Length: 506
Image 1: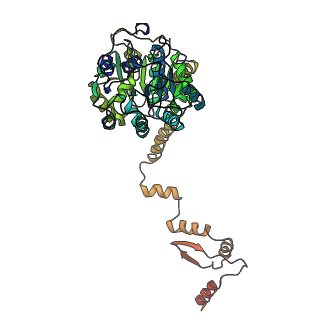
Image 2: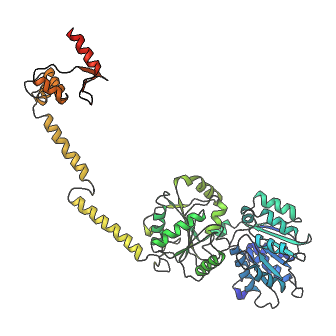
Image 3: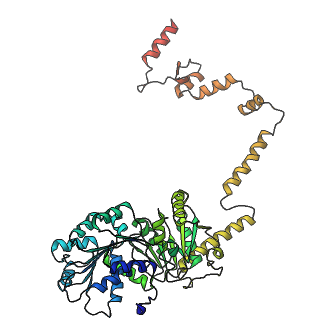
């Protein structure tokens, strides 16, 4: 334990290990980052008999990432214990290769529910000799819809087994599962909220959905985190945000369920090796991700309950280090914000999106600049700021000349108005009728002007007949307006017009 840097057990370890060594079932509620993995690994490894070539311990985890994380911890503990064989069984790997390893005999298996059931149906793994069964992150497994798979796995284990259930939250479904398959379990609750939040400065930035992406980039440039996780609510939003960050020159990558297993492992390894600064992830994909260098957690999409919020921000501020948890909230997120503040028992510190001194000030009042020297701000970011500065200079030049950019249309409209007013006031002694008469033309009455307009509307033959002294063809009203009756295509007048003329002659 001392070789792995563990000197003093955590509260969950102090309360759980003695009960597990006594052979009792345990239901433990503890957050991620409290040391619960060692709370069940240490007594399990102590009870394994390496002379028996079959599975004696089984750990079921909801995601591949968590299964790999637990396997990594186990390998650290069994380096000096020759003979203990460990195998991680999860989807995305070659089934034939896993079958070959299972044939050699394994003492401890860490598995996800889907792939474990696949091996059970193939007959490549036997659970009839399991002494200890661990359900880690039980709430997350049930939330992902693995209740039927978990129940089937439990039925394939002996009834005399010891069952350990660990969960960050304790909803009713988890309680029902414990009551059905466990024997008088010891209930252990670790009030880890205060422990988890110690050393983490929690900041709330109020923004809108449209401005959230630009605000995030601004805060990243101000804080300059060493490493950061950006949490999104859905896989699509995580992928879209990562593409936007890459386009602006940030060193980022994405982690969600749509990626292949090989790609997910590659991304996680790069992040652990500090070859990447920003990781855009969903809650499920980041489950089990334990990296000590994370200095910032950004809640790009606000979590919908206090437990998820605590689980997210628990990725930073580990091993006695300080961290930042920055949450972006739109006006419609007010309900979730109130749930989180009520759940953690405190108000989040509200800050604006600008003002790097206030935002980056540490909890002890000292200034924090980050450890990377601003590696996230690349040439693309500098170019964006340069363009903004150019727009600002153009605006200053426009104001110096007494105008604003794009205001020529407004100025033209304002200049036209005095001209119209001047035309109205040009003849103050005239009445309205006199001004109308002037516009109509001198010496003409209204009837004369109407006759002139009617004459202009006549057809060519009618105007010629009128000039020659002939009587023009008849006119009729149509739809409240005068219209001339024109000849047909053969040059003959309509018969109806002829009859009317004959009647007038008689």
